[in-house]
Length: 68
Image (cartoon, rainbow, N blue to C red):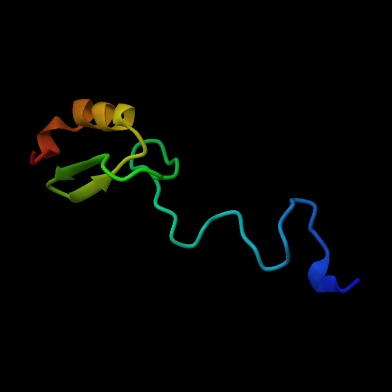
């Protein structure tokens, strides 16, 4: 058995990481953004969210920064 085929204790193969390289995180909670469409246009640019709940909470907390 070669060293390259040995699994690590965390279930990852050698050279793999826990994060996807281009994974987009929700601005509010930090979970992965897996569905398009949960966005808010703000004075700081377009913000991406994982769900409608995070969009709602962000809008409540940051109403002064909203453009739409």
